[in-house]
Image (cartoon, rainbow, N blue to C red; front, side, top):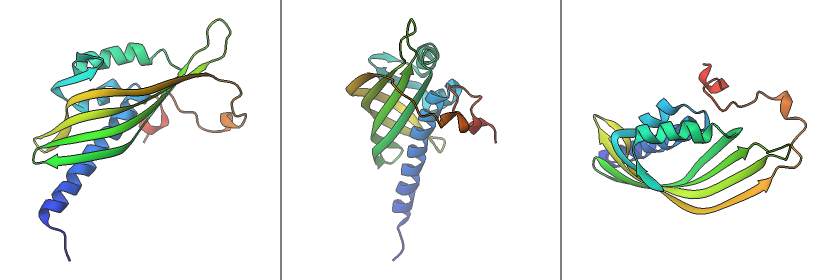
Length: 168
């Protein structure tokens, strides 16, 4: 039994939308704000608390996220419903932010759990986010105690576009 063209088109759309979600996470974690902006249509409306635009969000993200030692956004549990040139998507996000310690105190880990509720649109064959509402489910802040002594032997991730992923 072969798949119908509609099924194949839907699977391709879901895959392309999932890639946008992952590229957004990379852009945020590497502070590649041009990549973040490319995940959205220029006229998109983003609701991160208040409504904003992709350009304004990227500018604010550079200031806000740059204060952390690193961030790691994990996007998963994505439910994508494709309807022609539009799609609805709910995806879960766990975002870890390492907050530098103050006055010699320990660093803190700020864990944010929530969801992205997105409306995607395909324009000129390319899926991008048209509307995003960020839903907050929970947060947790913990002091960082011991860290793994073996970590320095590994290539270290960088909170910038100097990260190894950009060195192809």
